Length: 369
Image 1 (cartoon, rainbow, N blue to C red):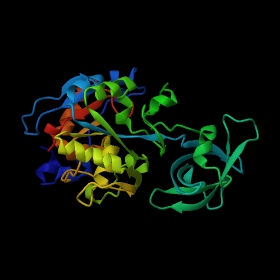
Image 2 (cartoon, rainbow, N blue to C red):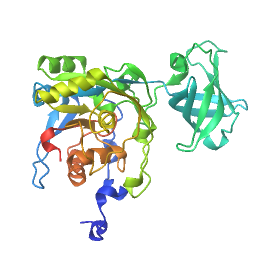
Image 3 (spheres, one colour):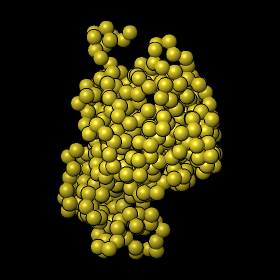
Image 4 (cartoon, one colour):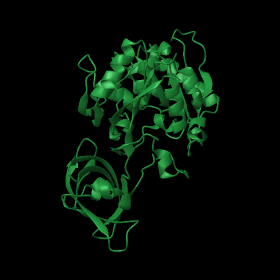
């Protein structure tokens, strides 16, 4: 028992309770090839205090582990080339990470070096794949207190969207802990990515191959899709010791009537709802905050931590997350914080690979609190 527990502190609601030590060599720098050859740690027993260790599998075993009639719900967002490098009129080099479009061609962005981006500052981006002289310009029009970012108005014709030209100017933004990757851009996209708008991949989906998806279908394990454009809310650090006071940044979702009907039909037939990734969890649970899952288009900022009352999700496929992150808290809400940290120690001891390009874990419904 820790000193904080001795003092009667509820570690489930304390940032310190979500800390763990990860050897740097366990941070995956490249994805598994093929994608479904990554390892899969399966949790399939109740949280009783005497539960058996998680089971070691390969991700492609998923088609044998899940049951016919189960429904996998996936996030079909597509990562955009959201990192841009440019210069100010003075010649000073700058870096911009686009977060979300607030109005037509007006984007919220994180900027470096931030303190020098005053209102009216103009930024010039050179097209990496264009002839010399082809430039894109943006002007700082406002500051966003919630993120410390800036609103950038891009100078484009009214009928042209920034997303349409980003490939010529930007690059896919890998997370900062991936420092020595040789991965191609398409390896940081799911094979079912369709809807452009994310600044990071829904990484639990990176393990699927077209062949595995087909095999799952052949076994009667169905698939449904929704969209959550992964933004700063996903990776923004929790900075308050009392995690109940953390404010999630809003992210845009679309849960269609078709997906809602698939979920209802699955449950009615006795099938199980397995979310592929924490973004799917937040989208589904966010669309069910009225007490009943409904089609929804708009923004959500649902923060899930232990004590959360589940509405839709019964099982989860997810990667291994950073210490003290809101994602670690979400998974803890499903199986318990202490148990999750024990499973992480098992994964570290078994040489599992962590974070975005790392291995996965499957929490089956029988393991859910």
